Image (cartoon, rainbow, N blue to C red; front, side, top):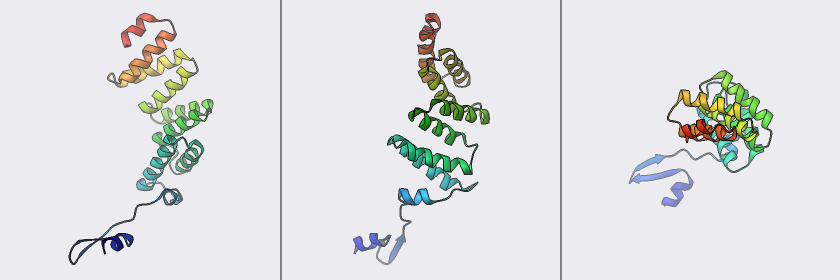
Amino acid sequence: ERARGRERNVTERTPGQVEHRQPALDVHEIFEQQPSTGDRCTFDRLLGLAQAQLMAQRFEPSLQTLERLLKSEPKNTDALKLKGDVLYFLAREPEAEKTLVSALEIDPKHIPSRYALARIFYQQSRFKEAVDEYRKIIEQDPSYYRAHDNLALAYAALHEDTEALRHF
């Protein structure tokens, strides 16, 4: 009896009392939903899907999901930052950099975008630019230890050992 209730998305709580549950959406149903401006729930679900695709190293599907999201909210810095990450993992670094710069033009205080941009600069051996970005992060949030660690590494790469030691 209880198993049949689950099949119909109905669970008996006590005799005579029935609770109806909303079935969980699968990935295909989430992707088929069309986000519209102001539809926060669908947007958040699709952003979560894109993050899950990225974590599963399914970069192309993640990029498709993000591009779809950005059609409805082109100035969403979280989606832009995630798109920058996906492009970086696809070895499309110039596009990743451009996307992250766009996010920072919208919100100069968006630390995750700035951190991702600094990481790209560091990976490309553009250490002076990485230093500038890490310093901006630390100005905004002095307790952000990862920015201190990476700033120290960038200074060390520039052979500025005294500065590097200040941040280790």
